[in-house]
Image (cartoon, rainbow, N blue to C red; front, side, top):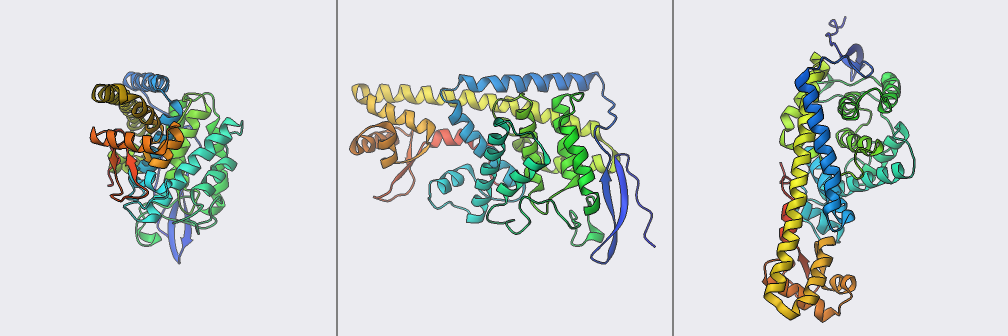
Length: 388
């Protein structure tokens, strides 16, 4: 006879057999939970909302909102994938996307690239009027696991077998998610909650993330899809015009606490503690992103001034290439000429002169197919993306 199931204030345990072992699989109660929030918690909610509003407005200060979004999406992809164990950096991803060999295993960078594709697919569908739904979540998962590691883990399909987290076997697992026969009831309830107007959006995003991770509906990729869910919910509700909140930086920096907070919700019902952790992350990450945007603007202006001061009347063509590199921080001479409208020799000389000023760096070391990196710019964006 199996041991009595443990108690949890946030769900129930069902005894199920996995690999010949009887285990207690956790089925979470529907959202929302009963919350005991005080004045300090409401103040934190207000601060997080204000920080998010400032973040949504800051990208309008940038010369190219699409460029900012392009690189922020990639930063979030790098960070979220690093939480799952990849070693890819932002520079590795840019090299990979430019058909150049990255400095880490190819599977790592391909995994990050698939995250970018999944995020872009989800945003495109939402902007086209498609609702945030289980169907869209499956689509996103299918794109995420379209190649590389995880391609054999039922991309785009909810699991049909029992899984467990931590431990070498089910009996020693740290956590066992719901059995397959309980999965759709849990997911249907979550889908309904995603559109619950009575719950403030930041609380809804925080609660939905935990619930998704607890349900663990896929064989692989749950962490990355669960973090994407936060972004998609904020964008779908119009809180963010673009996905420029990269909470994965906060989750990565506080990785142990992140996992512990998720688990304590399941075992002890500590929703309030999770919400405080999440809201502090929104506030801190928003402030960091605003600071990053300002640093980027300062760098662009500083480099323009340096080019003008050093080159005088010859600065025109160099400034044209500098403008291109704000949108494409990794460039070949051919691409620099094509995108700037300059001749090949003029574009080459501009890149070389910027390299002499320390603005760009040639990264191949060869005579042919040379690539120039706008290194100070990428260094600003790479803050916090050092592999774990």
